Image (cartoon, rainbow, N blue to C red; front, side, top):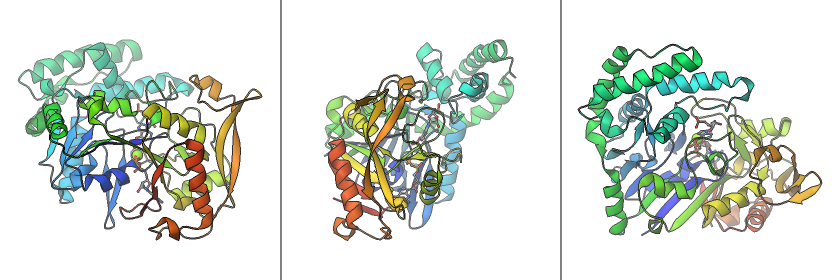
Length: 422
Ligand code: GDP
Ligand code: IMO
Ligand code: MG
């Protein structure tokens, strides 16, 4: 049985949630391995919309075990809110497990995320302000609060120690308002009690599933270009959304992975700041934003929109070792006269086809486009390749050839069944 990774191959929000949901129906285990509640995955089932941030999408299937792996950062308050919302929607969280090694996002991390963004002035990253960066910083500095500490008997001592240390930074570095430890202890003690029964060593469960030939699905969050090392640094997140990050963050070796599916939109979007060579500032960009409903799931921010960038796509194929591509959200392109694909960049008069490591160089890159015919037909009820208009077929075939990777599925609408298997 496969160990399948489904990951974001652009700047996030590619529609991973929908595909993870489709494969979760057959999975024994769904594992999140990085990021936190900065992710926002939308799953539409029978007209009902589920917005998942930290909880793996397999939660919608009662038979599926859901794991928040060691590489994830967990905000206990936000997680419990998500649990309460799902429970009210009739979804059971009995099969949700959190690794004891996960680092906790605590009130001082939220405060520091906001303060550090403010201190950057116009050079802010445009983070989701969920405390992701400051929590991973504490982890790397080896001063973080892990889940086993949070639900353990030294809760109060560990929390007081961490709060005191971070309040010195909040006051000393930013002249900010210190976090009230007594209030925090009172609030978070209850969270620790509620979460305790979910906290285990998930790596044993994941390994057992792999060893016994179960179908293990690794649920990616964010996207390749937001990877701390491989993305458009410093306009990235603080974890590793690329395929390699799945092993580190779930505690399994690379031999557990058999398939790596990269999800792409048929165009490109980005939230937050940072370079975006094919960004559109004209009415075509607005058209795609409105047609695709491109407004953030987590922050509600309008997403920046642009044409499909095959330089980035080929980079994603390479750094993730993709075995298949999914082209999602094709339906929003309906009604455009021409579709453009960036096949290379013009960098100071030179044609380059590899994504540059220095984002400053990217700002001097002008896209070189190939043009394709648009389509006017409503494709949202197409369920086979043959039903698609010729122009859509030509566009998909071109993307497959330009990117050098097999396209295995297409997305033509937000619902679970609005996909085409090739
Ligand atoms: P994720 O973070 O990658 O899971 O993606 P998000 O859920 O943040 O954003 C994708 C949005 O597009 C959600 O509102 C989905 O319901 C929606 N969506 C997913 N697939 C399709 C599709 O094929 N067509 C259209 N029109 N919308 C889609
Ligand atoms: P999903 O899983 C899109 C972006 C933020 C910001 C940068 C750093 O829904 O695809 P952070 O709060 O992580 O420190 O912010 O990363 N970002 C995302 N953009 N989709 C996401 O997740 C994202 N998670 C973080 O907008 O630019
Ligand atoms: Mg999202």
